Amino acid sequence: MKRVLLVIIGLFAISLSSLMAQGKFTGYMFGDYYFNVARDASYPTLANTQPSAAMPGTAAMQAFQFRRIYFAYDNDISETFTSRFRLEADQAANASNGKIGVFVKDAYLRWKNVFSGSDLFFGIQPPPAYEVSEAAWGYRSLEKTIMDLRGVVSSRDFGLAMRGKLTNDGMFNYWVMIGNNSANSPAGATHKYFRYYGHIQVKPTTNLQATLYADFRDAADVTNASGSKVGNGTVTTALFVGYAEPFVFNFNVEAFMASQSNAYTPPGGSLGSKSGLGYSVFGTYFIMPELGVVARYDGYDPNTNSNSKGDLRNYILAGLTWKVDKNVQIMPNVLYETYETPTTPGAKSIDPSITARLTLYYIFL
Image (cartoon, rainbow, N blue to C red):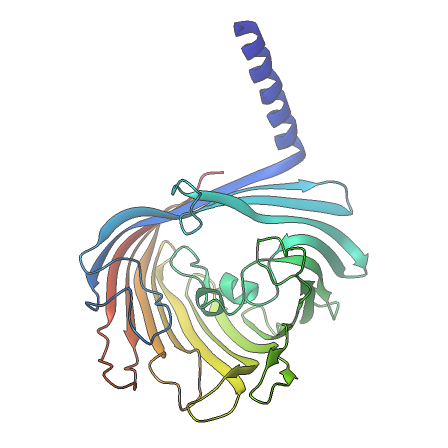
């Protein structure tokens, strides 16, 4: 039995060594100690409100947590084809037994230079929505960017994408994609409503960049008051502009609007569009290369109709980032979210949510 076990271990070690020689493993984790300084007494079941971005739990709730654990394998199949397979352990995606769940985050094949200056991607992959702004933000370990945070566009989709240069100097770049609009989940046997994405990136200098983004999310028709079938698709547009002086400072602005046809009926009105609006201003100032100040402000209104009140959010994040090692960062930070007072009869004002955190981010592979 021992010999069999040793043989199995040896074969596994040889296989792992062979894989590492062919490709590259990467892995990182981020988590926190957090303490909820303040919460409304009725949190987390605040009436007439959209979901909060605040940390879970009532006032004085405290815990240690891992928010993300990534493990990826990248392999150059040939000079033309590469692949990525990434797993994520996410405590928001609990397994059936209540423990931290693991799921496939990325699984795609890349065909390089399928056309001159353009690559083709197939599989589970990031859409063009905010990968550029997330890279400019640089602190996914602290928070998602606004469209991801508010669930406007998922961070992953299963589909086919093309991205590359529009000009040889790289000033103008493009990215288009068609996907299931099912995030990391299977579309299902009856799913037929795709999402169509695209962005144009402009980089006039090495320090300045901008992206113009749009997508259309198809959906099944809905029935209006007269009994007719009408469209229910959503158009999302976004603009990002960022400027950076490496290891000195960076300043960025991102804004989006998402308009869904025939998704809202105001009191006494007829079925009409529902438009959500969000904007985010964020940046970092480096006191020294290893130490910086991070700040961000988000405003978010999921329904801008004048008859819809009580769902607007203001979200502030502020903290320090200390790079104690090239692969380890310690980030004390504070989260502050305020809530618009609902106008419905009997509704009360909602106290802000305040959370203090000590966040740890490290690369282990």
